[in-house]
Image 1 (cartoon, one colour):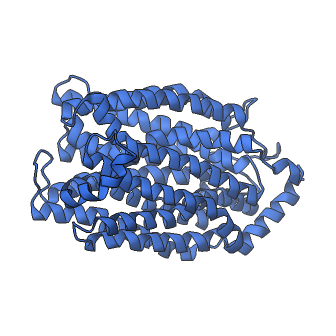
Image 2 (cartoon, rainbow, N blue to C red):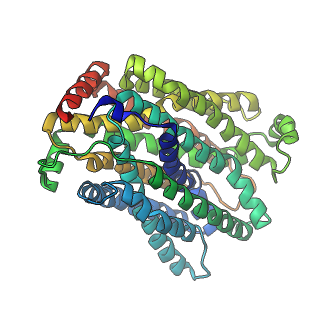
Image 3 (tube, one colour):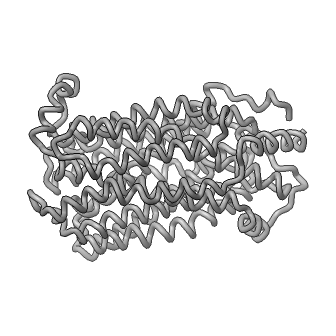
Length: 475
């Protein structure tokens, strides 16, 4: 296997990135809307919604993902280990993502059972699809620069999905349902999810058709699940990245799920209307100032995040992934903390802070995933056995555990501050809780993650050593 064989075409990079665009139509919806959906649209009680997202999510994280990782590593087909799972799960994932956001006409107990079943199926299929998809990035090329470039393509696609979900989805739901009351929103979100499910299924099939697995374990490699798990237990970079991933997705769920509450209940609505006046000339189809405000607020951060993603490989190649990841994550955290101190009429400063947060967090976004691929290389380098998917289960465990804990925290914290879903005006206590949810609470996991990365030993020097040694072994 020569170095040239590790180069990727633009077509393959784009095709691979469509897989994450499709998956993130589901994932970004969960991050941004699952708490609001279960509480304000579906009609679950806060304690039931919190228990559902936490318990089902943690089961999915710590049971579905390691099992799926072990299965994917042992899959043998003419298409490889990981690509076939992208194809096999494309249609089922689309169908279940639609069902999970459809409200049945059941009594309350029936609705709880339906929510548990559909949410569990959605997380199971997401694991069966996205874990092999993530592992594919570890075998699609062994070239570190190509892997960094692939990460940027991938996360530009992620940002497109995030842009749609966080900028336009709320408005599309209102339009499709014909209103902002719970019944209209039920109809609207069902219609929007139907379109998203069909689109995502097509993109997953394109991803399967345009990619190739290049790093093939040697035929003589022998491994068992017990050996793989023992290797993980001794792999300190993997343990650190698992914890870091959990912390990051707790923050993403906390702040992402709190934006709508912040704009609805904290910011001054008259000042928001005045601030948004210029945007109405370019975005005249938004149904309300809250919908437009949420779109502009999220959109500004996402667009700046795209710039961060595009320049991320240059910084990673020059300074090493770990150092750049730590610096960008820390700076982005500062702009989260600032939200607690902004007055409700300081709309420009609020939106400006979101833009700067998006830029610095964008730099870190592709690095997180490429660091997991590096951990898979580190494991092969240390143990002479490659177990890519079970290594990538760290990302999926962290993703789902973080999402579950973060979403459950929103549903648990809001009632503690006396938030009332049906109230037109919230108490000062509830407003303070919303401010905490968008600032102080999500900043804590980010800062802990930065501290943990000081103990992650795969720096720039070790990256180059691992890449060189593995190239020699694979010849």
